[in-house]
Image (tube, rainbow, N blue to C red; front, side, top):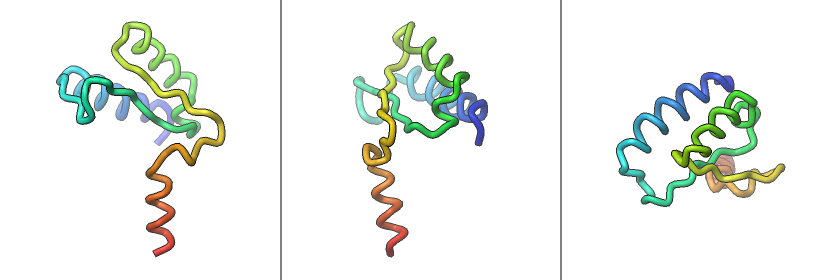
Amino acid sequence: MNAENYRQVIIHQVLIHHVIPSGRCPIGNNFIFQHENDSKHTANAVKSYLATKIAVKTLAVMDWPPQSSGLNIIEEVWDHLDRE
Protein backbone atom coordinates (compact mmCIF):
# COMPACT_ATOMS: atom_id res chain seq x y z
CA MET A 1 0.00 0.00 0.00
CA ASN A 2 1.34 3.44 -0.88
CA ALA A 3 0.44 6.85 0.55
CA GLU A 4 -2.35 7.52 -1.94
CA ASN A 5 -3.95 4.11 -1.30
CA TYR A 6 -3.69 4.72 2.44
CA ARG A 7 -5.32 8.14 2.11
CA GLN A 8 -8.13 6.85 -0.09
CA VAL A 9 -8.93 3.56 1.60
CA ILE A 10 -8.10 3.88 5.27
CA ILE A 11 -8.69 7.53 5.91
CA HIS A 12 -11.20 8.71 3.35
CA GLN A 13 -13.42 5.67 2.76
CA VAL A 14 -13.35 4.00 6.17
CA LEU A 15 -12.77 6.76 8.68
CA ILE A 16 -14.42 9.78 7.10
CA HIS A 17 -17.34 8.02 5.41
CA HIS A 18 -18.17 5.35 7.98
CA VAL A 19 -16.81 5.95 11.46
CA ILE A 20 -17.26 9.71 11.85
CA PRO A 21 -20.66 10.15 10.12
CA SER A 22 -22.17 7.23 11.99
CA GLY A 23 -21.51 8.93 15.30
CA ARG A 24 -20.80 5.47 16.68
CA CYS A 25 -17.08 5.51 17.27
CA PRO A 26 -16.21 2.20 18.90
CA ILE A 27 -14.26 3.95 21.66
CA GLY A 28 -16.65 6.81 22.40
CA ASN A 29 -16.99 10.45 21.44
CA ASN A 30 -13.40 11.41 22.25
CA PHE A 31 -12.04 9.65 19.18
CA ILE A 32 -8.44 10.41 18.21
CA PHE A 33 -7.03 8.93 15.01
CA GLN A 34 -3.71 7.20 15.62
CA HIS A 35 -1.17 6.04 13.09
CA GLU A 36 2.57 5.67 13.33
CA ASN A 37 5.49 7.23 11.47
CA ASP A 38 5.44 4.84 8.53
CA SER A 39 6.29 6.70 5.33
CA LYS A 40 2.81 6.24 3.87
CA HIS A 41 1.32 7.78 7.02
CA THR A 42 3.61 10.82 6.92
CA ALA A 43 3.49 11.50 3.17
CA ASN A 44 2.60 15.07 2.18
CA ALA A 45 -0.66 13.95 0.54
CA VAL A 46 -1.79 12.27 3.75
CA LYS A 47 -0.64 15.14 5.98
CA SER A 48 -2.44 17.77 3.91
CA TYR A 49 -5.62 15.68 3.74
CA LEU A 50 -5.64 15.18 7.51
CA ALA A 51 -4.90 18.89 8.05
CA THR A 52 -8.10 19.80 6.20
CA LYS A 53 -10.11 17.45 8.42
CA ILE A 54 -8.45 18.80 11.57
CA ALA A 55 -9.11 22.41 10.48
CA VAL A 56 -12.86 21.79 10.27
CA LYS A 57 -12.82 19.74 13.49
CA THR A 58 -13.90 16.55 11.77
CA LEU A 59 -10.96 14.64 13.15
CA ALA A 60 -8.26 14.76 15.83
CA VAL A 61 -4.95 13.09 15.05
CA MET A 62 -2.42 11.94 17.62
CA ASP A 63 1.09 13.32 17.03
CA TRP A 64 3.79 10.67 17.10
CA PRO A 65 7.40 11.36 18.08
CA PRO A 66 10.23 9.93 15.97
CA GLN A 67 11.25 6.37 16.86
CA SER A 68 7.85 5.74 18.38
CA SER A 69 7.32 2.03 17.88
CA GLY A 70 6.99 1.52 21.63
CA LEU A 71 3.85 3.66 21.71
CA ASN A 72 1.83 1.28 19.61
CA ILE A 73 0.70 -1.75 21.60
CA ILE A 74 0.21 -3.82 18.45
CA GLU A 75 4.00 -3.92 18.04
CA GLU A 76 4.19 -5.78 21.36
CA VAL A 77 1.54 -8.23 20.16
CA TRP A 78 3.42 -8.95 16.91
CA ASP A 79 6.66 -9.41 18.86
CA HIS A 80 4.97 -11.86 21.23
CA LEU A 81 3.49 -13.84 18.33
CA ASP A 82 6.86 -13.98 16.57
CA ARG A 83 8.45 -15.50 19.67
CA GLU A 84 5.87 -18.28 19.95
